[in-house]
Length: 242
Image (cartoon, rainbow, N blue to C red; front, side, top):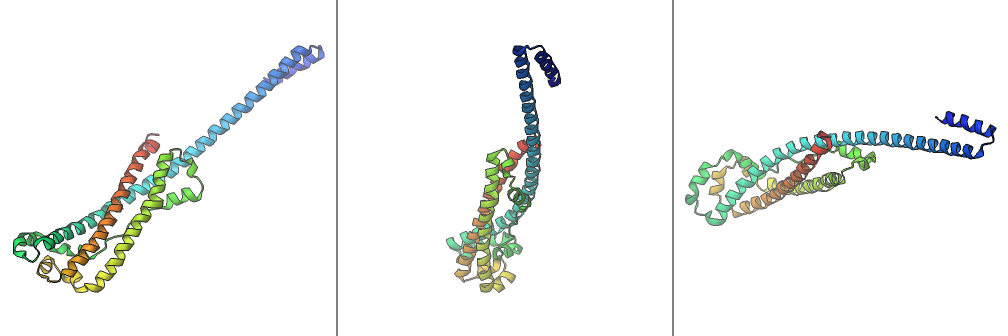
């Protein structure tokens, strides 16, 4: 098309038809500009496709990491809930009328005494998978995540919530170390029946304090789980339905 306009221009120059020559010259310039704009548009489209592909890869990786992390959280919570529920029951008996155990004979006899080990144990720590998220940040690709609300939630999970969970677990770990030193025999051999017969109020206070920290740890895990489920719901649109 441009060659066609150029040929006409040359013919018009030869015939001294300046007015028409200028019109065709302008037409040729317009075609060149349109061609450049089309090329830029195609280039931008290709770049957007590349960014979308990279974004999908990161989102898919984070999605898979979170699914596995949720399985880990559920496993930890299951263990923590056993411990928390046990000490809560013991504490209620102790606070109300612990020194009248005959009134609570059925409670002590009904409990699975093999689970008393949970009272003195901090349980498992939460170890999130950070590989994909760390790569996203270190590679400077976070801007490729178009859904900024989703990215903000992802940031909160990895940079705030995970650290909060880790901090609460360290507090449990510190108390457990003291509990092991104070009650090595009880941790290894005691059952609910032994607790029932105990006259040492301090052990219940220490167990209650220990469990309070575990309750805080479990609460942080629950909050983390809720945020992760919110992100996974967004991923259903960003990844699965895209």
